[in-house]
Length: 415
Ligand SMILES: Cc1ncc(COP(=O)(O)O)c(C=O)c1O
Image (cartoon, rainbow, N blue to C red):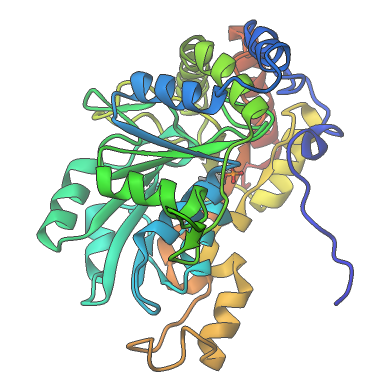
């Protein structure tokens, strides 16, 4: 095994970024974080901050159960383990997402099937999901990318018709709302990330929420208590192969403090995202997704726009580099978000019929690659994004974004 050029996370991924816009780091930390951490230490580690955070998160989300974890990848891993689908069962995913959305189900030998995005959108729709449903499908995992919500009513209706679970990955959309409902509370399960870069950025952390008592209690037993039952006169009996996927107590303390400042941060991000989208829309050849009519709050984690290749004489790569050079901190392309292309191991496993692609448990042949989701590929090929947008953006910063994109556009209109 060779040393690889590994990806960076958190502050390490941001520390060399320069530009004219506010930096995400140092993050604004809720004023109570220090008190909660002190409480844990002053009480000799007897304070259960994890349960306190879970209760508060449930209250804010209006749900019954919260299963916290060391991150969203791990929360979905716990969920997948608790759902205990059969090897070779299929789970439908949004194709444009972070690896953390799919990791847990892959590790539990499920087969990911990527629905294409709706034309002109970064999100999936009921229409793009429906053709992916087979008799092996067990769940649909939708991602509300960049804080923009999927149209959930038709998706939930489709899922109910086929008796499928709906899981919302709300990592990039915490506190966004769809017809008055919070992201992550519309389907059966919602998943969240509190990693340092996220809107509710803590040191790390994540969770899933649900009103389903069976899923919640089994996840706690199997994925947090390591599947151990207490037997009189013996002790721990491991009746299922469990895990220890738990949020650390001090992390919960910071998360609790970050939850308290979430509404203010989201309101600021919403304002900035709308203003930028409004301004960019006026630049010929620039296509910026706006907040859909069914959505009220835009909890924007990442901002982006597409360039019309018929209008400009350069690629998104060149366009984004120039935006970055002129001052949009962290501007770049985002092709890596296309999971069927980015997960080269899926292409290899499916091609070589490595378990679970061996038959059985797979019920048919699978193929991965960018061309399997042509709408998503076309979208991302022309997409420029930056995840440094944050609660620190002022109106002047939004104007700076507009001026930079306009300047780059003017350098590249086709003659
Ligand atoms: C949409 C989405 N899903 C899942 C994850 C994984 O979250 P975590 O880093 O907390 O494991 C992320 C984080 O980048 C994400 O953006």
